[in-house]
Length: 237
Image (cartoon, rainbow, N blue to C red; front, side, top):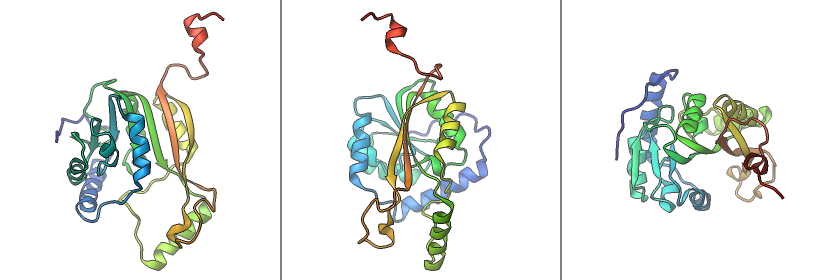
């Protein structure tokens, strides 16, 4: 596992970053996280054969299917588990200060990470700096009434939030951050719906069509509007 020298963490609350790092070390050293295998198998197919980076790799579920990609996380305990899951190229660093040169990678993945970061804008800028194409899966900001009901249920049962920082985003907020970073959205959609089976397993998935996660693909581009290959290359019919 490599621990490379970070860039300067300008604009990042370092105290909050260190607190979050320690909390994640506790989580990964303890029970860790349980995830659905198929999601990560599909994500890995998008990265196989590419010079790719997984930012906030956690316990290396993507790397289990694509061990050759570069796995980055600020939690030492997460990286230990990622190594056990097959990750070969491990780097300890925060998403807000990636220790790589410009355009090092073809593709940068951030799966379920952005909503838990100290400085989300800085992390997106770093994705755009190190890779031409960015794939983001982010926790959606839920409707106010649902969010309040969720908090009340958690309070009633004494449940705590899953991770140290929970800062879900609306699609417009994500798009605005991408635009500020000079990144052009190519595809955006819903990665997952709110799953009410945490209330009762007998409920069907997708009963409510409320997005719980967004899936966004962007590219580093100087063209803010549509650009056609035929016009650019001079192709003739």
